[in-house]
Amino acid sequence: MKSLRRRELLVLAATGLTTSGVSSWAEGDYPNRPIRLVIPFAPAGPTDIFGRLFGAKLSDTLGQPVVPDNRAGAGSAIGMDIVAKAAPDGYTLAFGTGSIPTGAAMTKLPYDPRKDIDPIALLGIVPLVLLAAPNMPNNLPGLIELIKKNPGKYSFGSAGNGTTTHLAGEMLKQKAGLDVVHVPYRGSGPALQDTMAGRQAFLFETITASKALFTSGKLQLLAIGTKKRIALMPDVPTLAEGGVMGMSATTWNMLFAPANTPRTIIDRLNKASNQILAQPAFVRQLADLATEAVSDSTPESARAFLLGEMNSWAEVVKLAGIKPE
Figure (cartoon, rainbow, N blue to C red):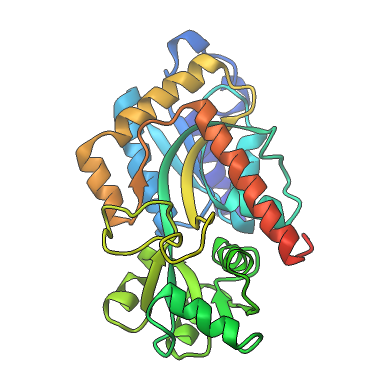
């Protein structure tokens, strides 16, 4: 506990977020001290890697240190709540993900994503891919036909209740009219293992977590969850091309500030973000993380995207009859 408390104090001191420093800087010369970037997931995962790469680029662009601060737990709710309750001065930011709308659809969050955080810029889109067991058909129309001919016989796996991989499977059930059972696991690893073994018919997963399995033929890659084919995997059809219309299955990364952060600061950070995401070398780095860079986001378009995601996943949860916790 003492070491944790010391760590927290060091982060606060490094970012100037002690009580004496909260309001001591003028908005007009922003930024003139270190910025705290809360990454609401554990170190070494894909969100952390992207967040740290982005933070380093943001530091170079703004001319001030950007200090990553991992605050994992509760599907990103712990870290996001810290930012929601921080001073709206641009010195505490969040590297948010698609876990925000799925979390809001499944449980009561300690903060309100619609009111307590300000979207700055959508940074990247992380597609989910639809994977099938080796003993299943090797294309989406064939998978749908088989399941429809055998209602209630098959099941699909996910990384856990309320995860994006779970709700993407529920959305596929709804859009394709499938009678198939959800089986939650404690993480992606066991869900992938059981699908490889044929105990689950299919699952959705990130490219990063599953690439080695579908490239080696241990799982069948049927479709990608984006609305259009992506340059990273140009030969992989979309869900719509497989006959499932009106569905996308992605997660994403977005930069947030506490609500009521001055617009001049939001605009400064938005401009810097778009400049970073337009750098060819950085775009290539993100491609290695199976992430599509977004370099034309505005605060308004980012907010519209967030609200659209919240409405979409809330509807999936409602139609699936899932009772939020």
